[in-house]
Length: 325
Ligand SMILES: Cc1cc2nc3c(=O)[nH]c(=O)nc-3n(C[C@H](O)[C@H](O)[C@H](O)COP(=O)(O)OP(=O)(O)OC[C@H]3O[C@@H](n4cnc5c(N)ncnc54)[C@H](O)[C@@H]3O)c2cc1C
Image 1 (cartoon, protein in one colour):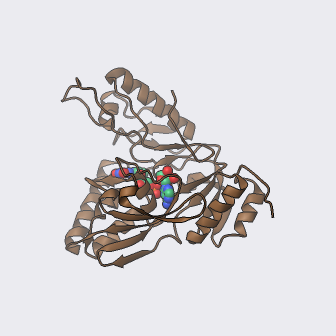
Image 2 (cartoon, rainbow, N blue to C red):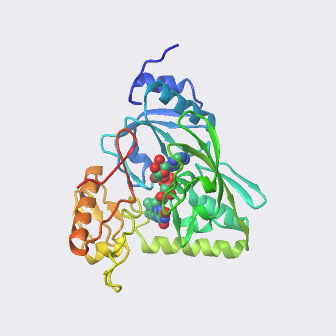
Image 3 (cartoon, helix red, strand yellow):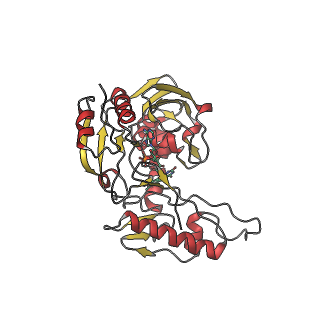
């Protein structure tokens, strides 16, 4: 049987065909603002896979129909476009959220929220990912982004990553092959299904106290509960002749340029932490992008450094766009 070629997952025929192949839910015209911590984004067709087989079936269907796809975790490091996506959004969450322990090795589903994984392992007396309690993404998104805080990163503990590639094939990728570096990996266009991490035994009470105080520190120092995506810009490379007493991090550069509180539409540079741009309620993706451009230009003009986005600006086909001037 030959299938009709479409290039957008918004085609209702595509959604119907996908529905017949998977156990999970397929929602059309789903507002992506519900699925990103920015609370920004237009409509898309979203699959909530019930298991890895659903993921494989979906990417195979996309390949046959010429439809691009995008793997979504908790949406805490991206900005979706106002007009939504043509790509099928594969939202990894429930269904891919099992946690299994084999002595020091823990297999953690990509759909588990990282703070939950941190708390569960700490309460069981295993340290290694407990510091991720303040990173509000999924385990899958954390591994793909090599997320980290308080000096810990996913690459410190990951042994293998179970992925499904664009043809629907399973792979067990060893950490050494995952290409981890600062806030990135080279896992490519795959869906992460789970990861195996090696943890160390420690006192549960001490670990829980540590996770509690780290969480409190995050909540007190950042606009944690407001719609945002965490750090907007990566920390820049500073010129060799840069004043050692001057700003070094993106947040310090933005603050030292006097941009705290700067606003475009509903998007605002947080008064609490200058590298966090918050959605004050009505922000569009266009507002956030314009604010990013203005901040980058003003910081560049004053200090001669170039700020590069840490947040991923997602295009209609699910690809990542550069921040153009
Ligand atoms: C308040 C706040 C504080 C933050 N603090 C930190 C911090 O301290 N340290 C830090 O590193 N980050 C931080 N972040 C950013 C963010 O939480 C991390 O990058 C997180 O790991 C992203 O995970 P996610 O599930 O939300 O990924 P998403 O935002 O959903 O996706 C990010 C990228 O990962 C890909 N992806 C997600 N899940 C999968 C999957 N299962 N398979 C394949 N690809 C996938 C997406 O395609 C996308 O390219 C913060 C964000 C917020 C909102």
